[in-house]
Length: 446
Image (cartoon, rainbow, N blue to C red; front, top):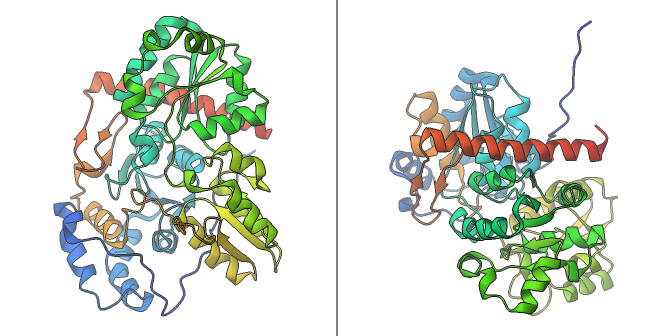
């Protein structure tokens, strides 16, 4: 008997391309494109406008031949946070939109795919590559697309602290690494028998880690860690806040006061001090403002705990998106997350008679519609160039993503590990990712 399975992991986002309405966000200057991409960028920048009637024929001339040639051997991916045009355009050419958990699984779940092209951020592409089959190659449309939180949680920041904590606690230390980290940091979780988590499963993964009876080093985000602890009933006095970035790297147990060391030893969870610059702008007063105006308030768990505690609902980008999709006509939602996501959600909601606002859009706020600049470094020329160069057999090596790659978001410079180091990182990071999948599927009853 033949056994068949239906892949329900990703579905159509519901965002539509509207005639005569500009597709694109602010154009990037030509010098922001790597050399191989500049001819495509020049053509794009020379287009008279950014409406579908102008942009799509130009994109079709490159992408349709590639899609016809590659068929189901090529997969295009993007995250909900990308600018509206990337979400729309990736789906137009047969691609998929998802949150970070689902993105990580796409190559793993589709063995027929040979080339994965991701229009999102580097840590997501690296997670895809970590779980990919040996026959698959992962490319990113812009290697400089990054995450401010991850920039303050690099391996060189965390490794000295990890070594000191491991020396102090030995095998009793277990690392939980947020998806918004490099493969090298995820490998630290694998070394300790720990796991990766995402905003959609942090509570489940932290609960699993707690059941191991070990001290948990949660790397990053401090707010997501605090939210997950609150959801699990872990009291504040059982948590210890470490620094982030250079501050965290320079912090030492030996430099702590006796009272601080006692608190560290007593803690169930040690939080690395990195955070998302976008989500920290939200405040409880914003929640109260919109609730008093009749809106249901929905927030991302990277927001400060005080915001999550007073909101009507909190969850990952998939959760937030589904809330918009399932809202009854006439509903009013105030959403606290990255600005591009909210703009995409607002457009989707308008089609369904639902009103969506950005939670920070309150009188006197300086953070209205705040978007992630580093995540937004993908645009039509990056997508077109990457796909066309791949079709022509000239895909730049800089855009090929391998496990353990470290990319400087400012310069685009990449450090690649030697094969032996790379295999070690792959083994440990993959173990942490696979453990995340096991815990998540067990929690979902699948």
